[in-house]
Length: 267
Figure 1 (cartoon, rainbow, N blue to C red):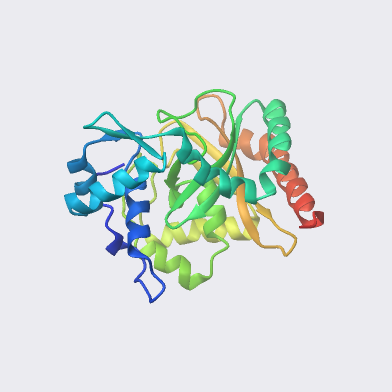
Figure 2 (spheres, rainbow, N blue to C red; figure 1 turned 120 degrees about the vertical axis):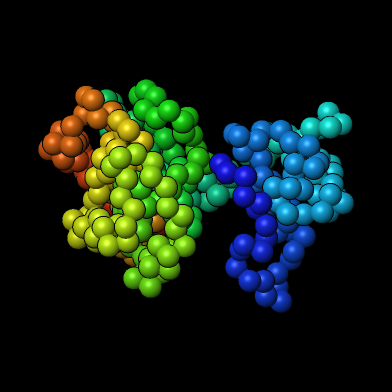
């Protein structure tokens, strides 16, 4: 994660119902990460764009509520913060349905399987079944990756209205992750259009050298894409041909089964 201040001014413009103190509290929570697991008051203020006094009030409030702990100088999140993410996961029946099917898929193909949703310019992992470590960065539930350079992301972006897609593309920071990374708008839009047309997406080492993956959408009973499912492997032992010919049919079958179960499940 970079050191760009997480200012509330970077979000949507507030309306009459906007509660600024609550928004600032969320920014303080979001300022903690794998790169900054514990922070001083000054560091939190710098990362969020808040004054020291404002950051201190929020930190002490979160500490009183049990979401933070402190040794008097450094603040860190407590396990209670997981309650916030679990509330989302437990409110979505899809994950109860998907997990055993994803485990069975992993057993069949001997590759890691993940499910993710779209959040702004990122995908957020909501379920992962591992076989082994496939990236230099550890990924877990809640981890975020740039949507435009992942198979999961392109499948999810493919479902957006054209105007929304282009707006996100115009706001996209560009980074040459690998020699395979696509950066120009025309090619990115073409790759997303291809994912939309074929109903799946394969990305070959655009985000990290050696990482290859293929993804398919998960749909609810209304036919709306609510998440995406993928299989990830290492390019030195899993070729694009193998992904398309052997693993993709297994992935599509699992995605269709989960979508069908979502379509028949009653609230």
